[in-house]
Amino acid sequence: QRPSSKGGQADGASEDSPHLDIQKLKEKRDVLDKEISQLISEGYSVDELEDHISQLHEYNDIKDVGQMLLGKLAVIRGVATKELYPEFGLDMSD
Image (tube, rainbow, N blue to C red; front, side, top):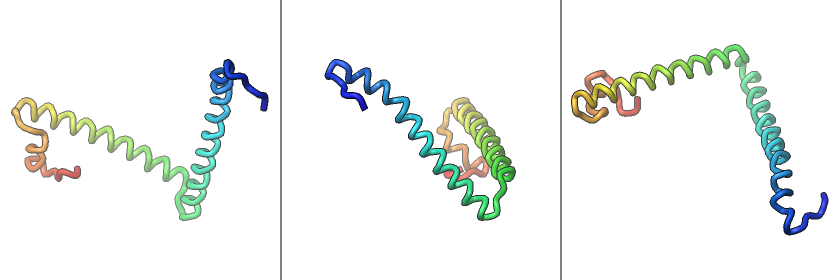
């Protein structure tokens, strides 16, 4: 490491930042690789996991649209969104 003067500390910090970011990304990659290896050892396949993730994204998109529609209906009726849940057979945790 090179010594830094007080005037150059900001420059030195900005130069080190990409190295820290790279190190953090490498550590995150290693953690994810271990998680993938564990899932594979438990009998999951990468294709199944990718399909499951895709289905979760689709579910979340549909749920977001449903929430938006409930919100608009609540505004039209002048009620709180949560008051519509029983009408549509929804639980507050939905």
